[in-house]
Length: 266
Ligand code: PGA
Image (cartoon, rainbow, N blue to C red; front, side, top):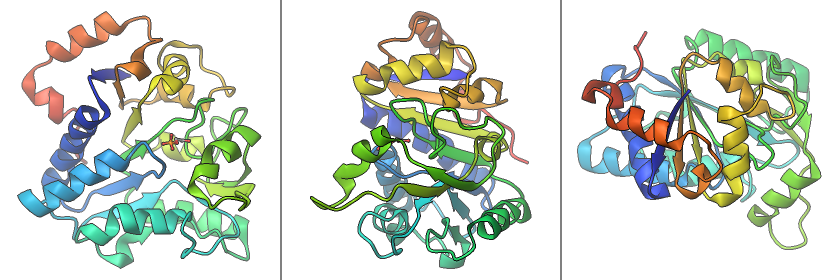
């Protein structure tokens, strides 16, 4: 796993956006896996800026989102459909038909989930998956003790995740307890995983993910077994890492081409 430590979330978002820009310019039909939450907002703002100011073209891009709540409509202000429209899709030239987000209102969850996996395969697999991490080390909505080879399926949220996401819902409104999420195994098949984490509150999860033992108690640790994971954090989120000096040394001494084009395009 490559660990890149940046002075601020804005600086980290710029590094992440450059990696995605490079992928899109080299592979205009790239398949992106996308995430919601507070973490990727700066990245999406930077991608929108690159679209507006540098002509970054999303017209050939296909996207698959990690997850969605079960039982709320796509129009609900806290739905991940709405989040993606408002924070990225409305501002770039992506074709609506190329956007995929789990359907939290499906009448047949297992069938929908199997179909979602098939759609990813049919699109040629995910080139780059954007990820955030939960305070407990969840990825997507794969909570602690999730199978590390799991596929897209329904999950029940922990009380901690429900509490953490309450901020996106109106006061007094109940956060759904169920979600559809890509599995850890689904995420592991992305050619590149790009994980972002900001703030001291994420420090322990980041340290566990990069330096702890691989365990289903912290599903993000499965990424230690992934061939190309790039973890980009700000300084507070790096505060519990043991090998920061080494990570900085590696990043500063990398050949320039590797800083952006860290992975082959297939
Ligand atoms: P956040 O969520 O980006 O809102 O912190 C991350 C996560 O729970 O995966």
